[in-house]
Length: 221
Image (cartoon, rainbow, N blue to C red; front, side):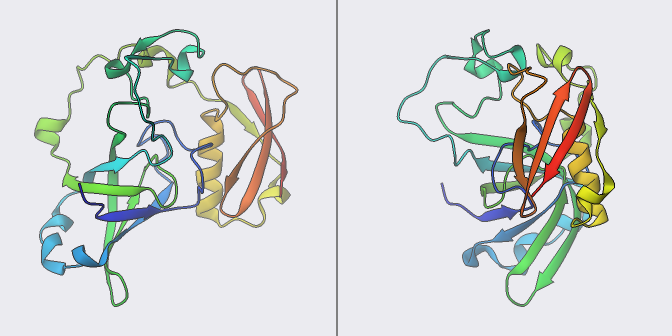
């Protein structure tokens, strides 16, 4: 398959990213296409859709072999589940699927059509294989069962942060950062209240610790 584009945002690595697409609707990303696909006609009609499916590559999870079972972090890292019952990046083919909101399409002189999307769950420079419109009449299933993920998602932390630590960020970046932090970016199997965790965001290192349901930002470098 051919890589058609790359996504760009404020997360240089996967640590700290929302664990699923749509969990942080303030996280904005741009999609820049490879020269071969910068053809305006290829995007005709796309502006009529509000959401898109992105097919992309787990570019940091390439491996020679695969395992039929994996240990989802959200189950503590000890319980094994079938790889096809999870969204683990370690699969026979390292392909991700995400639903995002299409905010706008900009036709630029340098890069051709550039898409602005929100709610992505992939880090900067992630390669994309395809883009398809989201169709609400067939893609939405409110009655669907969510398996083990039903019990582990939806719980948010209370974030405590001195505003002076966020002075280097734009208002949009602040909203995104706080949204990500309240979802608890830690690996689920780590629960040391004294441990300082950190991840990169918008050119800075964010440091924090978590005790019970409270997350405290301890520093921004």
